[in-house]
Every structure is written in C-alpha cells, then in structure tokens.
Image (cartoon, rainbow, N blue to C red; front, side, top):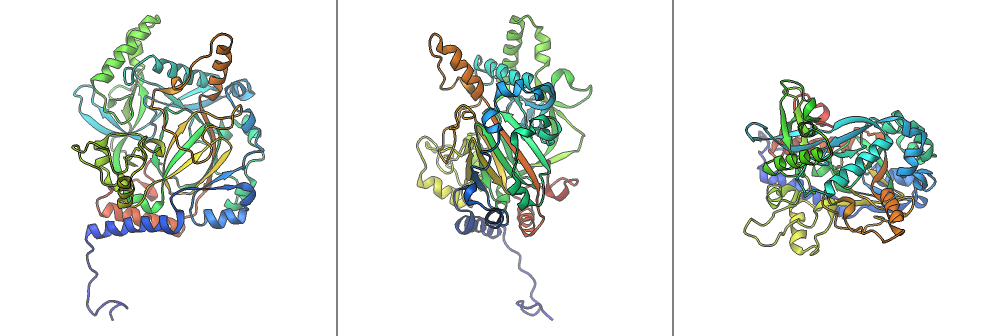
Length: 498
C-alpha cells in the first residue's frame, strides 16, 4: 500500500540543489520575520523573571542582553590592572594564549618556508604559563612595540587570557568572591551551577573566529565592549565550513625536529610573504639594538606547527574583520551577491564589516538586498560594561572587542551605538594625546586602566532537543549540497574542533 499522500508506485522526487538552497534561505528570512527580528533584545533584570527568561529566550533559543544583572558584583567596581596585580591571586600562574595575529582557533594561510607554497591550516594558540603582572606587562609591551612599526613589519605577539578550562575556578579561584552572588536566577533556569566559569582578558587586537558552542552561554562584561556577530542555527549552511589540518603556534626555536611547520602573517586575512620576512628582519634589528642576539630574536617568532598527521578540524572560513572584496565575493552565501572587480563602489553587504559596524557612508538599499538574498543580515549584539549577554547554544558567532569603560568610567559601548573599530595594530595610540605638564602622569594612569576588555563567561549544559535536531538537519543538507565540506571521521556530533 502506498504511503498516504503519495501516488501509487511513485518514487520520491529528486530536489534540484538550487531549490533546496532557496528553501534554506527562505527559512532564514522567515525566522527573522517571525521570531528573532533584526536586533537583539535588551531587557532589565528587574523585568526578567526566571520564568520569562526561560520561556521567551532559553526555550526559544533566542539571544538577549540583560542589563542590571551584575550590579551587585564587586568586580564591576574593582577589577582593573592595579587591583588584579595587587590581589593575592596575582601570585598564581594562569594560562595565556598567544598568537602572531590575534586569531586563535582560526583557519589561517600558512606558507611553506622553503617553497612559499600556501596551505590553509586550523591553528590554535601558543599556551604560556605566567602570573597576572607578567600578563598585563606583556599586553602593554607588545602593543607599544607595534605602535613603533608599520602593520606587518614585524612578528607580532598578541596575548589573550581566553583559556577555556574554567580558568576562573581552576586557576584564579581567589577572585570568585568578586563575582558573588553570581547568577542564582540563571542556575534556577538551567538546572544547576555552570559547567565552567571562564575569565577573558584581552584587547581590540584579538578576535574570536566564527564558531558555535554546544553550551548555553552567559557573558558578563566588566570592562570594555564585546561585539558579537550572530547567525542563528538555521543559517549553518552559510558558514563555509572547511576541513583543515590541525596545527598550533610555537616559537620557531621550540619546533620539534622533523615537524612540519609554516610561516604565518602578522596581519589577519593576509598571506605571509615578502613583507613578513622583511618584518622579521626589522624585529631582529630592533632586538640587536637592545643588546639581544639577532638569530635568537628571529627564532622566537611564532610559527604554525602541524599536529598529528591526518588530524583535521571542520571550521568556518568566514571572518567579517577581513575586508578583502575578493574574499567577500567568494562567500555570497554569507555576504550576499557582491559587485565584481570592475565595480567602483563596494556594494552588497559591505557595511557589516568588522564587529558589525556600518560603513562610513552608511547602509544602502543594495546592502539590504544583498543580505536579504543571502537569507538575512547577522544580528549584532554590543555588550558593554555591566551587561550580561545570553548566547544560546549552536548559534554561530564571531566576537570582536574594543577597550574603554570600566570601574572608573562605565560608558564605552553601552546600548546599540555602533562605532568603527580601530584597525589591528592601531591599539591604544588611536585618539589619545597626552596633556602637558602634570596632566601627563594622570592620563597615563587612566590609559593603563582602560586598555583591555574583561568578561566572565559561564557555560551551562545544552539540551539535545528539537533545536539541535533541526540544526543538524541544516548541517547535513549543507554538506549534501556541497556548501560545506564533509566533517572529519573523528568529528563527534558535528562539533569540529570546538
């Protein structure tokens, strides 16, 4: 007997790929129209009961910025470099991730040192153990060194405290009293305490590449602003998932004998080349001037080192902080159709560049049409000091950040105000001039307190429910349509390298 709804003896029809893609894009547009909208809600905690949070946001897998949720935390008034380096926790060692370009856990162009041939590797940061005073000193010194150089002229070191091993509870537990009473209402909703509590300290040079988490996330921002570029789970087909060999950064002098390694560019989105080698020479000359050995300085540069042969990671190749028109034309599923090389103006989705910032010329009908053709524009969540951001599980997100705002000045990024992010390497020098006379010392003191972004991130277990089943269906369709590469065989539950 034929199944209901099927003609007797009829076989299922083959669906053309372009029709399947059109259906996926239509579903993305419908989600924006019927549910998530075009912006992220901002709700005061005083108006958000645990029941409302659970029903309107968690159960619907919908992000929200919650204001007033961490007003009672001492950290919001206390945490800064001077406080943290004087705290007893400053005597403890922490894990710090270091990269040459501010991109850890990201697909990176890697050049063979002998032939110059380019590969694409997924590279994780170099991990170093140090105390908090050493970490803050490394942040200041590396930025000061970059301000003396032109972009790409020297190997960079970008430190970022982002090690996701529940580092606040495992490495800096002495600071936990500063985030009391925590988030008891969230624990009520999620059914218990967080699985991990992570402390993030960095600056505008670092960007977290597009990825998804198999956790429910709450981000509490203490200083600075984190800017999330978001795509819902139904947009997984737009992420250009690419399978790459897994590598990690190491100083050249620590590369094991016989290991495969590659040069990388200090500029995100750029392939290493002649400029990079010139930069290494410049760095070596600077080291010699400081009385150091030229060869040793060159050998300390960070290079990408291949891990176990055959080990691969499936990761998104999209990076909105890279403004190369050719790259954006090659990713129309994300950015929408872009004008060709002959087009004088950058149309399409140009205005949603780094951190979701609009272009200086503003948006246009062409931009809106391009986003609509792709399935919809990303949502942008700007999370400033004192804000708490709920990021639902399996949402793809890229995270940029900017300094400014903290215990001495709680502004800097609150609300939906958008700013053009400073280019990497511009750092603290941008927009700062010193006052004359006795004002110099005071401004330098304030500069040190404002030059980083601090956040606490809580992970709660996600539920593998209908949301996850729908997400996996979109992922599998994207693979079947050739929009994403096949996941590695060892890729458990589609997690890739997460």
